[in-house]
Length: 262
Image (cartoon, rainbow, N blue to C red; front, side, top):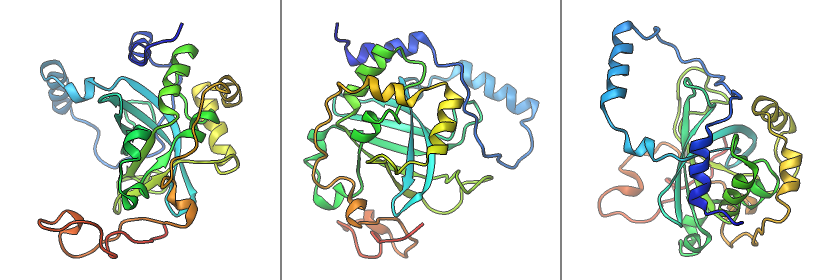
């Protein structure tokens, strides 16, 4: 029986997350939370509603690298909200524990929407075909049948990812400016030690997962995605002025969209 994608996500909520822990490797400086702060936190959590947070319905674990620096790799825990059949959004953390550090965000769109984007915009997006088919993108704790259905939904989507805390190198505070991230597109790109550590911590078996997804249909990557493979390195740099979104201004300038190695 074929599962509805929304039933898949509901199943995750009902089944609960995996008990395996993938803790943050970053320690932020600061005094421990005081009793007053803890009381305020507990009170707020009991009284205030959090609709955007409560709408998060799936946890995906995968890997990113800096656009322009394939050696700058890190694990990324995505907590995903489905906005509609063509658009999802995710908040990204460096772990799955309550002290995990918020690393960034990813916007995920269907192939149909990706194909409507202008050429310069497409350069910011990466494909998910290899991540799904290789088994490196997983939904820990989700029953296999439900995870398989979810990955069928994700496999032909495209993501635009910005990291604001570079936890692979900034071990105390989020320093610097946001970085555009990419996803892996072929075997041999991802550091095997990083993958082995993920499998050990979360109790996943990437090889077995890969084999179980052999029937998932991945369409050819749409033209314009993964522009880094054609040498298009896009990263932000500090500039004077209001930037791309200044009033009355459209498009990118050479100073705002620039090749900048991390």
